[in-house]
Image (cartoon, rainbow, N blue to C red; front, top):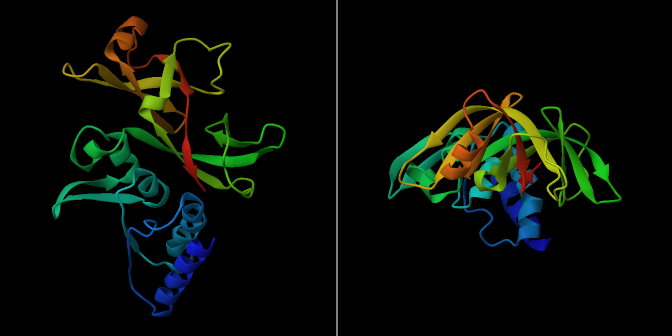
Length: 228
């Protein structure tokens, strides 16, 4: 789009000055969703292709997940949270900058192909197949896809689910359960291969299922945000 092209030209001009560091202040604020998705891969390549450190200012959780490897949360100039993106997103909704975001998991999957009949991309996540709509363009086979899975969009089952509209089911084991008596919810951390998936369930559901650390479960993934 024209807006994305203008932003790319502005970034190219900045690169011609041979900067030691690039500061991007809300780079997607004036862009629509299509232009934003066109520009994200360009910004993502700046560090890999040019070895240029990039600091991005953003208030949008999806932008942070798609582009950032490390997050520093500020409130009125004071650092209130910091760490690798995966850790900050995992504890979202509890403290610091994360209290303003939604708890979730940052996962990495590999692109495997495209189902033309159903218009779904096929991804490999730790040996499990995910099928997702909406990936624009066709990445190269094996290309890494970043996935943001919100904890509220994950359900858990003790046995393989049947006759459901949800197609993405991952098998793993419970490694941690975080509860608080002053909320109706509990957060269950499920190990999927080498990655961890967070699920938010009610404490009643937790008790009814009898979930405990070390137990095998099936994670039903309802919705996923992604970028490649």
